Image 1 (spheres, one colour):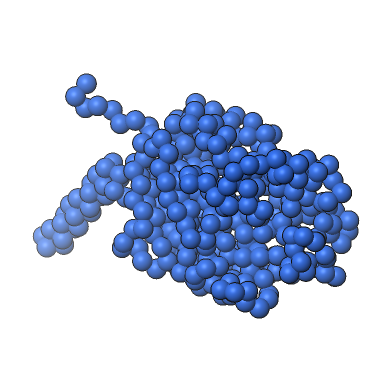
Image 2: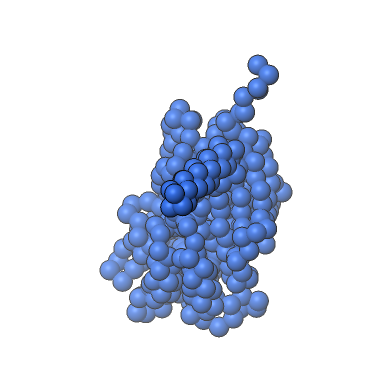
Length: 335
């Protein structure tokens, strides 16, 4: 009878633990999925520039990945400024864009090789530094097409995907003249747009979102709302107040658009290496700190139907942010 009693105890214990786990999931205590996230690696094989150490980027991301690869993660994302620059005389940029021959994209190749050692699917957001490359590639392909090719995109760097009840939307700051070949129509249009800007949100190192991309975004958000999906937007540039040199050029226009869609629960970005947080109409705006400033600026983000929890580096016990979601609205049990 002893084996039977032991088996019965194990079955009861297993059933009990399963019930606890299910209850935890129903109460929103256990994350549905977790991702790796980092911003502003800004790698270049070059000497320190003030407090910045571009050459340390590979060692820093490899260290982060060594920890991420031991965790139960679904995917990872780098939120732009993957490189510092490539194949140009950076000391003369942006006044002049002088190419260094031969054009090999070595900084880009090396940091992407390191990033691709992450053992789960990974996604890329482009930042301003990722466009700090020659106007034309060795075969004559002009930027931004040359940049898209180097970073593994086809004809654009904005896209969307769904994952476990969430819609993730990646935006590209495509309204900056520094993204384009100086001989192109797009360069002239973007430069005229930049010259027309007034107020604090006009840093030369920032960008805006084109009307074409805004129209695309509106359609994606409408589809996500129709399907009752929580939406998370991932962009290099912050858009929350107070506005400043790091702010998305057309942040006010973007705010007006997003306020039409209550299912947008988060705007996740980099760019401002100091980080930041704001809540706009119940929507969380989280600016991750830049890895270029500190080796420990790498993150795990847990997503559940009720909340988003953010952990930094090796510390998985003390969240940096515990963000309750305001959508979908909770039902009133008294009704």
